[in-house]
Length: 363
Image 1 (cartoon, rainbow, N blue to C red):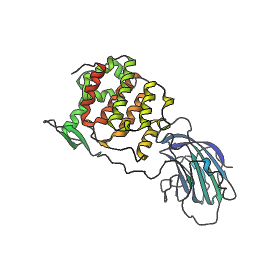
Image 2 (cartoon, helix red, strand yellow):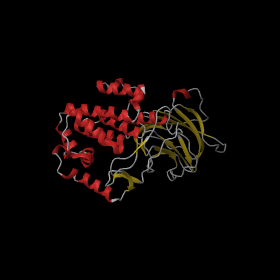
Image 3 (spheres, helix red, strand yellow):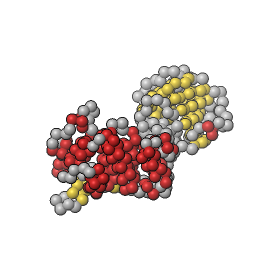
Image 4 (tube, rainbow, N blue to C red):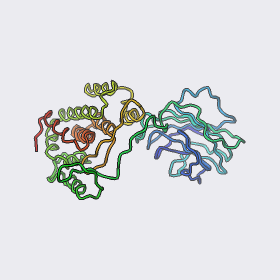
């Protein structure tokens, strides 16, 4: 037994290897393990935070009778002239694990929970790993996948479109939509409007604490709209956030699918627990969108001064704003900005409908 302890993950990974190994020098890549000279890197679902890790040493390969209890199981070779330690990405040795003597080993990694908080930063361990090492005299025969039911690091189930991040959107003097370099004068002018809150000082509630950047961006688009949102009661701001999620899902074509409609119904009822399983957090919903071949994934033009975006991802951003942000005003502003992004350069359509629905002032 080498130990049981939490391991702090950085950039989706931690490693087992010699303290002087270059853990970025991977030579092969699996969906759970990436081996290299003197180390093996373990790929995690979370981006940052702790995971639960157990390391076990045995005299021989483990049995295969418990594979179904895990969501991913892979094996790889690991050979080192130095002691093997559990390492963070920065090379720091993780306490709680006994050093493993130098030698040639096979390592089998078992993982569970990688899909649940994909690409998020967490404070408590949501993922469990078991690493079993045993000595071998055989030459390394690469990565062997024994079991996999999670989606982490799997090949995409469908080809995803790639937004153009090299140019920003504007309307020219004739009102026509154009894509231009990021340093175009009109792009700079828009960002100046954002920096100045649309040309007049913002309400104190928008700058208190950590501020409200979503409201600041919206001020560059339509300052009067922002002032109208600020004037709403907290209950109406919450209602506005939910309304924006509906508009974003509709615009992105997600209301064609029963579970997305069920997610909206749970949102309206204030019963997050009633949402479909894939609606546990925004990351899970995005994974569902990116892997379900039935759901279209489309590019939408950016808002003024911004690049193209994936429309369905921004609809999920609106949902997360309505469900995860505690402050009603911040939730409303974030949901409006996200929903507006699903409209791209047609965002005035959303703003007009929003004004009508919530009796907000017109410019």
